[in-house]
Length: 365
Ligand code: 1HN
Image (cartoon, rainbow, N blue to C red; front, side, top):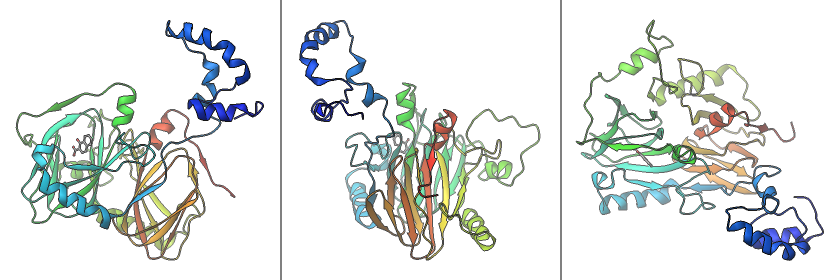
């Protein structure tokens, strides 16, 4: 904001806009504004600096959801509605700065989905891509494009755009996962389609493990064509991710800003696993503290193991297993681990990179 005689802060607050003009002269312009508005015309100079900000101005705020506080609400939801009636029994993680918008950041959705033994979340497909990060349970499956995968805590599972998917719990305990979706990006472009499948489950036409056999071993079937921008691997099991982080930590020094942070990749092109959401798993060894870091992608953090605390801007959050927190765009954050901590992270960085506007900053570096 540029100083303009002290009036502009006041008017910006009043009108919810950031005018760059001398407000003393505004009354004389009101008649013009009013007549122009009848022709669907509006003066840019009253809104310019709110439209094109000096730096990111997120409405999204830092926040945390403690699993032990929210799990009872998931259980209560199970007594009120079935997975089938709800279609997806999800409690949305609403950013307190964006109430009622079903957003955890300005571009991304997060929710916790619970499915009880014997339940099926019926098949549907939509333009939005989804990631599932398993928080609690085992012996539940998701079926994606005709192939099932069994899921357990720490697994990162993907539903690509416009693929049929249904979920079922064949175990004897509730299954809970974090759903991350990009529908706000899809909706920004008005590109959303959705279809329900006539029947609970979509037919399976590939054996369980087919995708992992084809693409999960740093090998790909020769001459196979891949048309999608989403990885053909749709379950990245926790056991293997954890092994990779452990092995890395045995011979590499921890990075000052990221400790040990590995990105999930698409083996077809080496890029991010999904076209709209970047995903990582981070290991912060006990006693290690990362240096302050900020980037233009607001990020969602889901703690898998360990305890620690994060400073996000002026706020501090103490976290433990299954807690979820969010850091807004361009707000510096740093983490300190009390015990070996493993954290799953997702953001819209991949989209920003494609559009050439992603930035990061290592304050003090
Ligand atoms: C959805 O399709 C799922 O398939 C989960 O499990 C969460 C949130 C909003 C819109 C669609 C699922 C969702 C969703």
